Length: 102
Image (cartoon, rainbow, N blue to C red; front, top):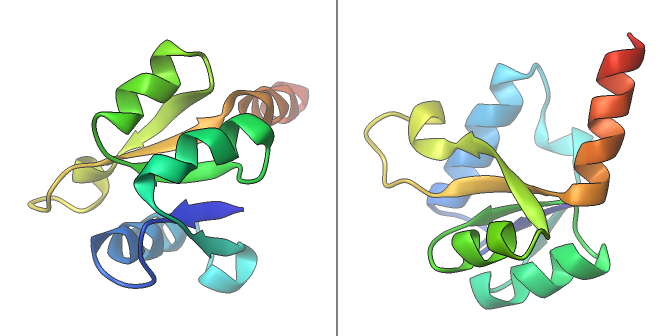
C-alpha cells in the first residue's frame, strides 16, 4: 500500500512517473491518502508499505529505523519540489531477498 498526502497534486505526479518508469500503472498498487504526520506511524505499524514524505517526517522515519529512502523524487520528476519515497524496513528486506534470489 502506497501513502500519498493528497489524491492529486505533486505526490500523484511522482507516483505516476515512478510507476510508468517501472512499467506499471496505478491499478498495480493500492493508494491510501493520509496526512504526512500520520505516515510514520502507519509505516511503523505495517498499515502502509511505501510513503511519499517531506521533512521533517522523512528524517524522523530514517533516524528511528522505520523506513529507508528508495527514491529522491526530484530525480523522477526534474524541476519539481523534492520529497522522498520511503519503504517500510520489513518490506525493504523482502524486496532485497527476492532480488538476491533471482
